Image (cartoon, rainbow, N blue to C red; front, side):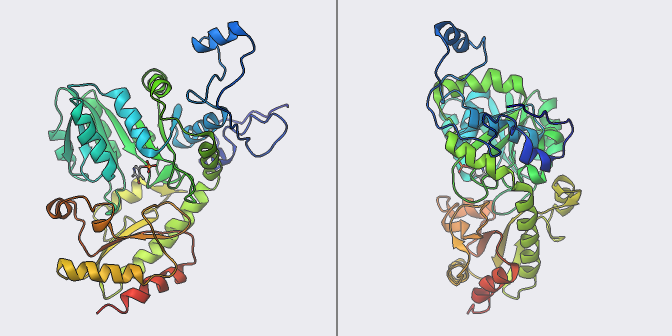
Length: 408
Ligand SMILES: *Cc1c(COP(=O)(O)O)cnc(C)c1O
């Protein structure tokens, strides 16, 4: 096959469709899926050179695979990073990053509002290996600065957070990290590269749960780390080869194809979310709506500058809302009533799907916290999270109105 070489400086939307699409062997226009555990070596001497990293070539799919490599190249192109490494899940990406960057005696500063499993992994599991973590307010830059110690190696944030959509200032955190000789990692799951490229704002590593918007249709579990080639080659790939938190080629292929429609999905789902958030704010039973696209959001200005599509500020597709002034028991009853009255939304924990999902964080994602921890995290019993999908907006409003209009 003669292959065209892509011109430089293509727009992200073009890269989403075209990057890493130049490997066709038979003229196939859709990327091939290489479901193979190992690769036949031309001869014994080639095998020696490939195992020693002296020659390019695939060996074994725990190490690398052409389909996984295509997904990695496309995602790196969209994030504006030199390289990317695919992982079995979003959590596997965070595990790989921590194993690669941290050792006993090191210190991490982490937002207290990040994904629950991330808090358990970094604060709990890595604590067992002598890594100390300080949890700070997501939005208070002064707390991040004050937490810096001589042994601080990593700052970790997620923006916006789930479910309260707190935004952090990536540039400010990068400045603190770099002045301390540490790295900044940002979990870009909720924005995806369609809305935000943290590396262009100073983040060193960008973490993804490919399970969410990158796949976009709730089909597979996947993850990735985007960042500098030298760091990934030297600190992460050796661990991947021996520890095996490898992305399956099939899941990589699903994500690779999902990336092609990412931007258009994010635009449509974010527009639906803004319309739903605006409508929810006007409902008499609703006390508060958390959505970065609303003027009432505490960091609306920062969010609109940090998250953009085609130059326009964009709030993303996840929102949460609180039911009005109730004690904890009746708040939970009312929240369950609104959730159980839906006939369109799926009651499921996933987000980033084209199907709208609805959850009660206090009893699910944050159910294992104590009531005091939940209150500190701002997760009340009347809080409902909606990850808005692609359904027609009036059907979504009607689905929530059914429960909201019949609250007792
Ligand atoms: C889901 C999620 C993860 C974990 O991803 P998995 O693919 O489920 O392992 C990490 N961070 C955020 C923000 C998430 O939403």
